[in-house]
Image (cartoon, rainbow, N blue to C red; front, side):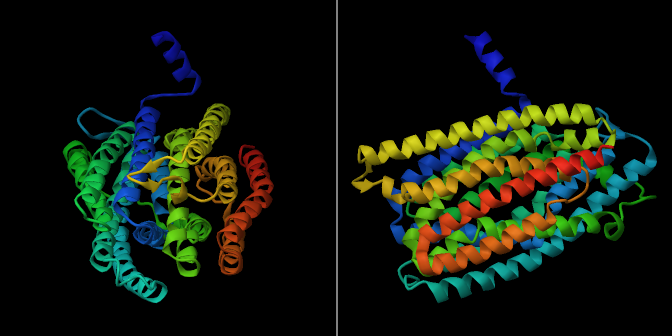
Length: 453
């Protein structure tokens, strides 16, 4: 039996980095399922709408992060490919590479502190404007203080995120995945406990601060000396933001911002047009689908430092073999998980499974709009993988594709949502994804050949 499991793990490409990453994703996926049960039990339909719309609104941090996390990982990986990490938490190699690495760390700290301040002010203003304008239920739901606390927690996580990205670029993918697994492990018990004891929307900030505290403690205890050594390195040559990062980053930023209009507009639009109950159904469905995508995409994200290192060394044959293997494995996981989700929800509805007298099945979207959301999740497994592969070359060929997709999806969501509600939104999104998919493959296939000459 053990031998069979080992063979299966090898076939699926499991290693320790993927193990910890997928463990975190599995904890998140199963935790989200149990969270659904607690939400049904302790929040009403209106509160559920606020719960998931909170998450969509705080996602505007993408306008402030501007895709820098992924860029940091890639740039650090390129510099680290010329260095060697020693057991005494120092780096061995040419001074110019150590200097450039140090300049990247200084850049991260300075920029993210500025972003965080602007993000906090924006979140407070946006939240108060949106919920006061579009909800007639604001007097029934205590949302103001929970929103302020969640905004602050989001900002604090934003400040920590470049350090995590930096460490991943150093090759600490397995250890960071382990820390993130610990975060997921502690987050859900506090979230569930908060719901049980009547914390309502406060649970979002509770489940934000506790994992943050865990991550800070673990990173400081393990990487304090390493980060201090890199920080104190004499900078004789640095990575120039305007010359090296900005020409690449602005394209990534446009793609990420486009992603917000594709993936995060659904809940706010439905909240404003059909009310918090329908927004809550969309939110719960998206939570499950995002968990599936996060799980399957771990096969790609854990390899980004390795992809970047192979590109820096121009080992393209090894790069392509590694990518093809991981893409096949991730697609298999994605399809299997989506199939399981549909069967599970069908079973819940078929047998009228209830939780303390409340129907569980009606907290999700109906079958057809749900299927229209599942198809893009499957296709995006390919597109996002292709984009990650190409972006490891320090380029962004998906700029126009992402921009067009974001604009079209924004118009589709707002216009079709206004006149046809959730059916219009989900059908429009599915159709646009199907139309954009061949374009994505064309970009991947042509740029790969062009850049590897």
